[in-house]
Length: 244
Length: 264
Image 1 (cartoon, helix red, strand yellow):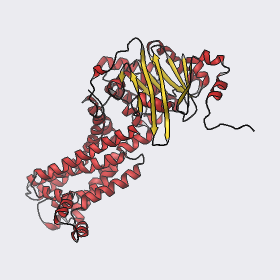
Image 2 (tube, chains in turn brown, red; image 1 turned 180 degrees about the vertical axis):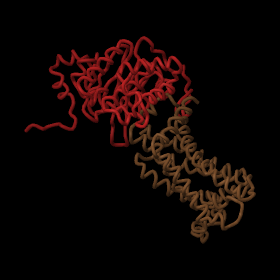
Image 3 (cartoon, one colour; image 1 turned 90 degrees about the horizontal axis):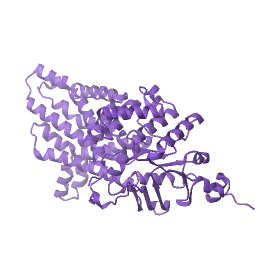
């Protein structure tokens, strides 16, 4: 546990040691504001909800989360510090989890800093804060799943740009698999069962369910198990690299 | 039972005790990368306390790969490496606790200062409180880092970066030290300092260093192993090697490398 804590700490502080953290947070807040108030027409809708705010999260995460996760392993591989890290007396799972949690913790800082939106909607009206809390939890879970995908892909390459591009592509597939543009492609020939399996893999489907205010155990299990599966793959990839 | 990945379950007593005999035992170590490349091809040797073993060989001979297998960074294709009697595949954490490793190029986190970096390593090495402060103070003194402790490692010269890597490797006073080209890229004074440091620590430890510099073998090694194309081609004391002729000539005779010239 000591190793996990220290790896987490180092990685987390690492974000703030470079301008990356501040740039990311500023851009994230700017884009959430832009999407909520301008594209989402927060005021024009005249509803005391944050639905417009949360509905853009999958799309923001799609491009911003890979920017956070791309460096997780690629940078260590490139600079050679991975050799140092992997020969320190810390179990592999603790390194994988520590680094992942640092990236997630950092993303949570950015997410938490969106609180003015919550204050605004409470000042202007009388929103259902239960729904808002559920949505925040859903957003945190979804960010975690994106990050797990990104962390794993980062472990496969020493090039951060490649990690970014592939992560965006994979995350895109997971995001849109419930949309008509994907389902239509299958609906002509695939059986109904397969269709619902593909649809059930969509981040959007599960996230929308949560932002409606119902934290269904199935949606939580979906994001949690997806995260665990990707992190497990992350460790397997590192172990395979060790075996050469 | 601790291991990297939960894949093996052989308990600690499976290892046999070797204290007082050899601290590093390498047996028939083989490393293949894909079906075509054999980087290390059946390397065996033992290193006891007080020995400084010099790894010599042309680039790509398998020196670094052998070290990476002993330290647990790479898994051998076959063969075993044991440190203090612990098999690196069965008890990787146990092995990693008892050795200090300076990887090639002395990598360190560039955004940290040497102090932050050594505090991180000390924490991972399970040093705390007064013990930690003492360990860091000693490592800093031995490597001459005192003047740059608060500068980001990124901004340090090559020599200081190397010393940060050295400080990290000796921080927990490990019984076994493995250093991949510890003096590479240092100026003559720095080389001298590092060699002195190794000589100072040598009586209490088993040390492996790799080097290109033949005079270094003379200066600090009690024994030299020459590796070529993944195989050991000589294993002797520097004095014994010298009997066969000048060291660089012996080296050229034994190793072929890429520069094999044909004579008409």
